[in-house]
Amino acid sequence: MLRSPHDSSQWLGLRRFPFALVLPLAIAACAARVDPAPASPGAMGSLAHDRGPPASSEPLRLLAAGATEASVRDEISLFETQSGLTVEYSFGAVGALRDKVLAGELADLVVVTPAIIATLEAEQRVRAGSRVDLGQIGGGIAVRGGDPLPPVDTPEALAQTLLAADEVYYADPAVATAGAALMKLVDTLGIGDQVRAKGHVAAGGKAAMENMTHSSAKRVIGATQISEIKSVPAATLVGQYPAPLQVKTTYAAIILARSTRVDDATKLLQFFVGPAFQARLAESGFEPAAQ
Image (tube, rainbow, N blue to C red; front, side, top):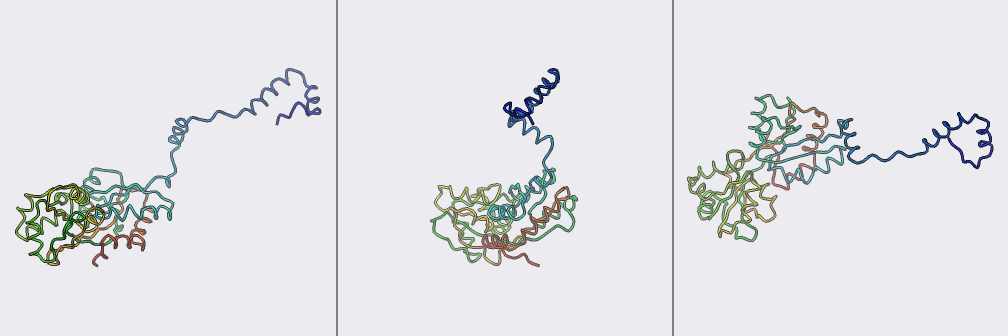
């Protein structure tokens, strides 16, 4: 440590050294007192990137069906607080999520239907034994907030309501479970062609309901899974499909075979079947999955 020049004993001691030795020592001591210039944010970012973050700081990546979107968005922060982990998530129709996984999109977990899981298992994309069922949900009919509520409680009443509508909004049946279920329902009622002719299709059920709420037509109907209807504030749930026509879809979570975060992903699976997340699913209209 370089002392003050006012410390006479040290200063006198230094005077006993030859000048050639004193000068380098003084220079070295002064240099030691100079604080290094702070690195620029860009330089720090480059250094952090080169070192790489520890594995636990990487987010878990979740792909989830649109039917579970509201529950995931509302509850995932609780999981992050409890676990110390972070989660990146995106939502879509189950068919679109299947295609993403098969195309190699980076993800650790997926929430989809058993039929999609079977397809992924056939392609060896699922970690064996990881599936947990989250719940099941059925479809329903929606209108814009403030619109009259049409009758939908019997197959005959639902058929008349759909035929009387100027527009019917639903999810793409090619990729969305809810859209495929509606097409099966209207074909069973014998009004499939009429409904398709006035149909307005979106990539998912939530998007279809949002589109419905912006329609300027006089009589507008939306049809998708109940949780997707409830997730759109400007839409009103009229009621479920009549019991003879109702098909309830199970949603399950799996860990993908390519995931390197199995322990952390398992924690998220446990959270999904825990009380907080299950209560939020029930609020959205989910019921316990059939055993």
